[in-house]
Length: 105
Image (cartoon, rainbow, N blue to C red):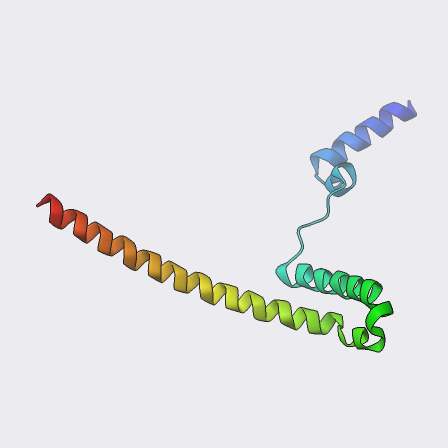
């Protein structure tokens, strides 16, 4: 009786998608800011662990905030570069298509 009740409760919860995270062991997708922050903290810990013996107190200046701001700046440059590359490729495609149309005529 109890196992039947447990099965019914589990099936109902599964239908209502309440236990997706528990059953599939899945976390909700983090936002870009959350992912960047987690990466910053992890890189800060790695830097502190591997470089502390060699460089001493200098490593403490490599904080998660410094890494976070560096990642933000890199992301901004990457977006700008992507836009520049897109413009160049569009211009090249346009020039090639004009030359192809001229040669066909």
